[in-house]
Length: 251
Image (cartoon, rainbow, N blue to C red; front, side, top):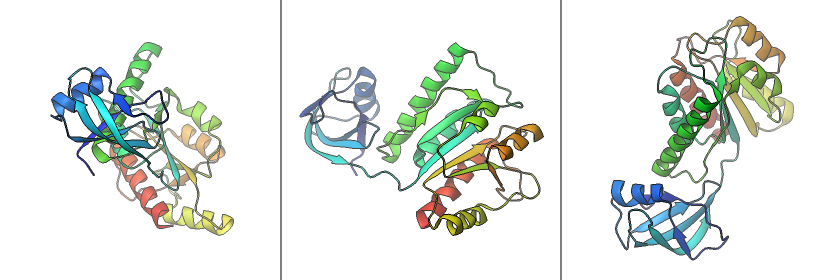
């Protein structure tokens, strides 16, 4: 795979030339030091890719000549991460790693124990920042599919409104939580196939409250253990997505 990647959403369905935004031009030419004649893979974040040649390495208005187009295959399953907001910059890292693991959607949540509270303006800016983090990760790992980053919402509202998933899971420290392998085996036995759309819910520092955990169970979430150790929320999110990705790839 060529080293250089750039994000672009062209107006034409079959473009012969792509003009990059100032941000993408700067990143390609100044940060990555691409030069005229270099091969660049442009992608729109929805699976379309164009193998291009950099014909104008202007740092503000770089131009790519399209050689040919191709379509990247999506994963055969769809993962959504519902993540209670952690403190500090950890959400940025979670979004990056989740993008590398191929999530389709990240839902930032305010829970009872969430220490980060955002007003509408700060929430919008955070979502834009996380979208940028996802884009950076997609370019680095070669993912042609950008995850949707939804607006911040309360955990309770999301638990009650989450629809359209084959399987809804919540990372749990409570006694009686099942292993992911056993939950997937039960689903396969009941439906004759692996789940196609799976939602993982991961709590904040200190986990979800007992009331939130109870609401999740009544809303159809299956409590799943991530092992005997207490993981930091950013570790729990990536661990949960990693084992789910592995199990579904092997299904």
